[in-house]
Image (tube, rainbow, N blue to C red):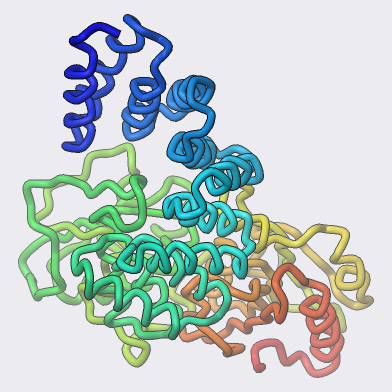
Amino acid sequence: MTQDHPFELQKAVGAFSEGRYSVAEALCRRLVESDADQAQPWFLLGMALTRQGAHAEAFRCLQRSAQIAPRSAETLNALGAVTNELGRDPKEAEQFFIGALKINPRCTDAHYNMGVTLQRMRQYEAAATWYERALVIRPDDCEAMSNLAIVFKCLNRHREGLGLIDRALTLSPQHPLAHWNRALVLLSLGEFCEGFAEYEWRWKGGAGPQFVPRSYTQPQWKGEHRPDQVLFVHGEQGFGDFIQFARFFSMARQRVGRIIVECPAALLPLMVESGLADEWVLPSQPPKAFDVFIPLMSLPHALGISTETLPNQVPYLRVSANGLESGSRGARLKVGLVWSGNPTHDDDQIRSIAPEGLTDLISIEGVEFHTTAEYLEGLDLVISVDTAVAHLAGALGKPVWLLVQDSPDWRWLLNRADSPWYPTLRLFRQSHRGDWRPVLEQVVSELHRAMCDRRLTKA
């Protein structure tokens, strides 16, 4: 290595620490081109690349660094973290972290990353242990506190999680992840006013890079009365979210002159027929003139929604019957069945049910099952896992039996069989993570009872 190289490496380290990752990358590339046998430039190049989202190339650079310096806990930890970013088998990442901890048992980042990896694998008890170990070494680690809080949420220890988040925010009041996780815990507890206020941190980095705020010259609407102005509501997140939050269009409409809503193409006919807005535009279309805007899921915060003021009158959507006559004839119940959701959803593996587990349910005599939402209006009952179909059925005022995992999405709250969002919805909850058998046995029993008395909505 020439005498200039230590100075160049120092410049690269400085650029990286200042967040100038492309500069650090360029400096490190020159270093490895002139001398490919030094571990530190390869390591720093890998770190600069992963900070810019180039995880595949970062992995190769870190591998090269590990080949030169195999006893570097820092490099093995970084390899595990990049493995997670690449979406590879979490067990592969786990091995890197174990290797790092064998070299340096007090490598806090490896403890933390083991927690992240086990959390991805839904091994929540083990993940909690690793986060707690990280906090023993580094007690002021707000990331570890925030993630441990969500693990506690998944273990139905919400109040403990909330205490951890509050501790993290005492140390770092503007910590985006802590605020976002606080939103999820508060909403799960039914504390909607404060929860939806914290939910705004999705636009400030708390929920990840997929949340990019729209940039308009017009101001964001905060819920104030503007009777002579036009409000534009832009969409976000999934179909189920859109259907669930469409209930707020009418409330917003009462405070402004007109409301224009950006709507997914697949939902546009339904929304137009339901008449909840003055005008609809597709995501591919630029909105017409408006005075103020708001993201869809910011509406409850702007409107000051609490559990007491949540609008839950149904139906608030209208759809024409398509192929089925409304209601049952004779002794047969018409039941829609949805056992799986979008396979790309992060939680689809735990929210969906394997078809072979439904044998006892679909073999009930006197019940006519339909496996599509196309005929919702003509059904007596919809039995569904947590998908957009359940929201659609609830918004249409149809009886819904919703099957949810032991730690469900925040909107289904805790320890209750009913929902403040949909008065015709009944919840069937898992008692043990991953075990749908008792849930389905309860549904079979209740469906037999419903055949006798036609009582579908009472718990």
